[in-house]
Length: 175
Image (tube, rainbow, N blue to C red; front, side, top):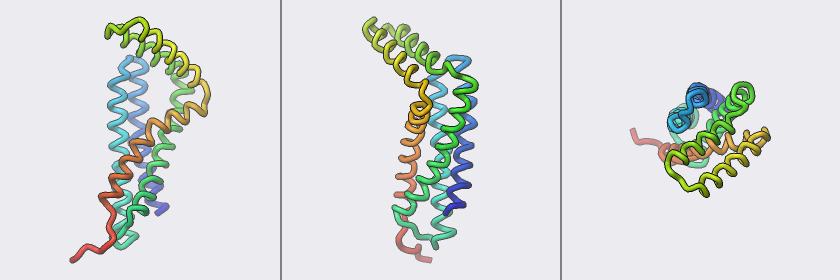
């Protein structure tokens, strides 16, 4: 199981990290945060296809075609943890070395977006304060790590649940 988890986790990590680096750079320089977010979550789903692949391979190559939901979930969640950890590490490097004012720029983008939509001054003031609080919190590396895991782990958990339900097999397939 360890080999499948490491290989699939690393492949999934690369699939999610490479677009993340490209998209965040593009949104950071060009201000297209919404498009980058959509593409980012799409790349997460693509990366977590490795959960299905890894669990399927484990079931068929090492477990005689059988796997319980629990064992499938265990394989899948470990793949998710490896890929997610690569994502978090890549974000930390990207953020601290290349985009240390990302939180401030993102906050300014959100406020500009509210103004353009004709939001009330009260809503703009509230969001301005929330964005300032967020930028202040984001100065703490532990918070950055937690927020980054919170961004990717729910997607991986959902894919793991679905894959485990689809791939579980307690009886051999009749020939």
